[in-house]
Length: 312
Image 1 (cartoon, helix red, strand yellow):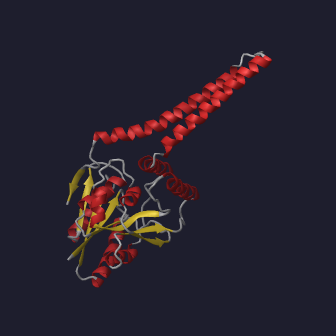
Image 2 (cartoon, helix red, strand yellow):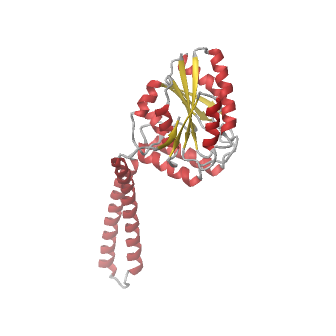
Image 3 (cartoon, rainbow, N blue to C red):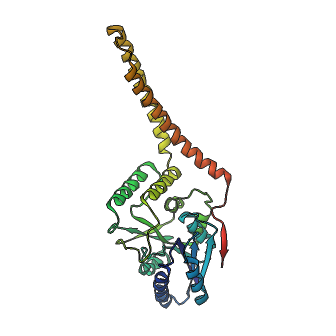
């Protein structure tokens, strides 16, 4: 028998889970008809929800022995939920997908065939359109992927979702990366392995509201930049050279101007501008270096990525 683990991170998805369960079981039945030796487990990771998410999951558990769950002691974030789900999974293959049905379950048979019949280690999905998404968010999302591909050695696919199926070998490789500041899309690429990309049109969530605000996504993008690129540190060095050169030229200019024309004015406005300019530059550079130092500090604490409150 072959086992396929379905990992579902959940945060306040009380309304969406019944629809998701209905769809995923339909697809599971379809797959088991094609692959009689295939069995499933559905692992719901409750990321500290404040609604009735766990009540719904426990009810499903009572109806279906394939349902398993793990509930966090508080909200640790989706990255921690994905890691916990991979850690709890026992399948020969593992698929991660959201509960809001923005990751279409009907793609799963095609993804499974890619890893079973075509020899891929992973089959991942990417959105080819962002229909229904705010334009400002779409603009910054595309900008983010272009930026990351320019400053990082790891490939970032525009429109990539966390929805993917992986072999046990790839899952084990991901679990070896125990860093607490995680950006899973980058980790997927960093560990390598052969991946087939499957494209689909954007799908609206079936119920509930998105948990990602614009500023939440902005903070998430900073995690990716700090985790998979040292370009900001190189930027600080370059900026330091530029500012130093500018300061030297400015000093030369002021000396020559004073020798030729004297200094009839006190120079207070120019002095203030120079002080503010250099102070701002120093703060910017210190902030960038501090951000990397802060991430290092958090990693050295070696705190657990998540804490479980209950599981089954």
